Image 1 (cartoon, rainbow, N blue to C red):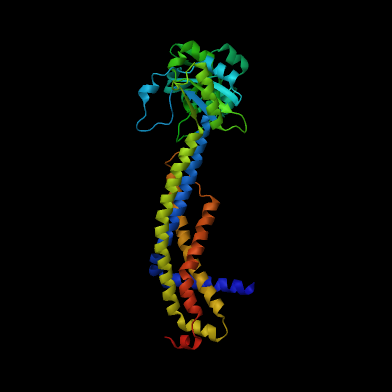
Image 2 (cartoon, rainbow, N blue to C red; image 1 turned 90 degrees about the horizontal axis):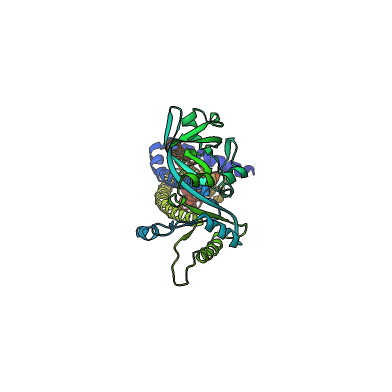
Length: 415
């Protein structure tokens, strides 16, 4: 154990001596390692953080859910919007039919939306989303009420003028969110009684539901003011535990065809959109970006590896007489080999630390301007240092082998 620690300490000291004695040469040689590790950590940390944020945003659509809509969410450059716009909108009666027929659904909600300008006394806020929902919406979509309460069964049945408003709406109109409960909010000569304020959600990359700037009302109230057919209605269905969204999608397609009495030769005049497809698309895109990041990092690391190998060749030549003296007084070839390999690994670790420092500066800068925080996970740091160690051993293996095989007599004579 003491011997291993001695080798480690000697290698560490020699690496420090190399850094002090040849600062510019060592820095330039390690720069490739620094850029490579910067690329690896930077790309992986950014993508990992971005992926977590997008998945969190996508969860606002509801997990393992299918949306029945007249629109197809797949998009694309040749999207036939002209065909979809002519389709009939989903009806709440269709939701009731689907609810009776489906054996795979656990929750089902009808959702409509529009936008209005809301006022309270002299304060005005434009572009506020109004969401009309049925009871199961809060089961499919998890949001918390920070102040006040949510809707109860009586609210849904009677469709009274009650609203749960978003955090930004509450702050803009009432100064402080907690002051909104018990107040009224006005639009188009109508008034809503505020019974709750939704917990602050923050910025989203993918806007599923912008709860911060929304006013949530019951569907029955919404339908008494607006025409649901013109309010982007959707039937939102969540699968039972253990049931895949794909299986639910197939079942719902059959039930909707039955409800709309479509013959086998007629194409669907609706779309059962599987929310899981968004997550698959996101993972596919991030997979391609990861490959690009690794390709750039790989080139930089190869350049860095040659730089470190060059340092080690020069170091072995400069220390030839020292190597001979060590071997003459009893140092084993394996000890010489390990010392140079570890020195090479330490040099790569220094380059990796510089890369990590640059990534940290990048994360601090980016986190202040983008809608999510970039977090460097411990696993990513461990991966980076593992790469440094492996790269150091590979870079130093030939110079270290040359040093270990030296004849002590000839080495001592070398000047």
